[in-house]
Length: 127
Image (tube, rainbow, N blue to C red; front, side, top):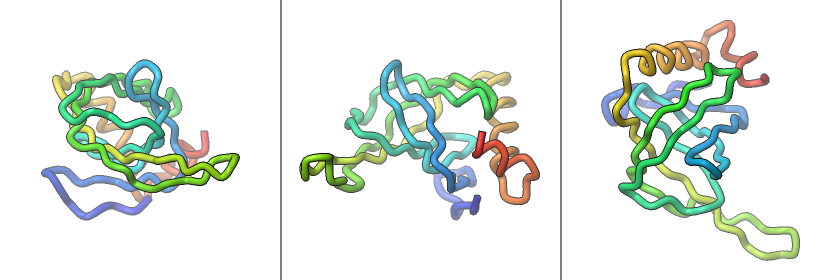
């Protein structure tokens, strides 16, 4: 994984492999990048800026559930559907809110696992 240039107060790490996470109770998303303060996700349905959702990491990374506020959500691309229909894909920026010390520790461990040069980073993404 390549480190994304420092933005918004915390270094972010691009997630090179398709890594499924869950935002809210029913929205399946792909994690695009991650930092200690938030994440960028890709998904099929729009999210409302300002809304708070639950963000759940897969057990292979640390079984963390954390609250996040949607900072922005915009159309990223239009994919072609099965019958030639165009389907919008969205990217949204999330800011983690009300993070406890325990959650911060788990998040730090996840970031360590995903950081460049980590011996467990590649295996975590393949799990």
